[in-house]
Length: 134
Image (cartoon, rainbow, N blue to C red; front, side, top):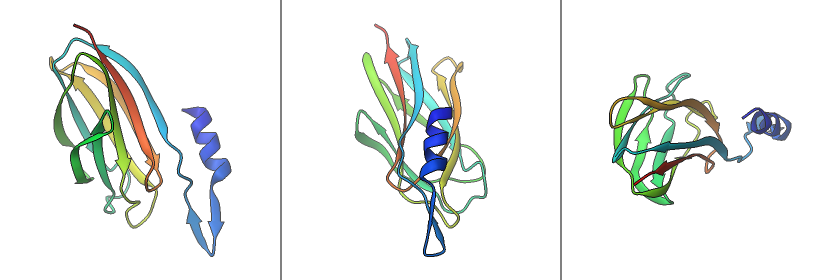
């Protein structure tokens, strides 16, 4: 995460008086579970400014055009045996970019699997991998 942050700051540019955020994907880690589904809660952790995301599982959109709010929103995502790549794709950067969110992922027993944040440019993805055992 530190390396991605350094790449982001190095690539950060100001063009025509406006900051241009580089499109850098973010790796949120890999986890294992036996759960049939995961619960994802997410919110805009800075100023709620209209940030929108789509949640993809293995590159297939499953929940589209979520407007991130000040309070957490909950989504139940079924997962298959094997590798499940859950990606959050930034559709925009709201009114004060970048696209910012805090999220938590819980297994179906309510245990926390992951908790993190992202700062994404439009079109960038933050991805976590969940391996489901048989």
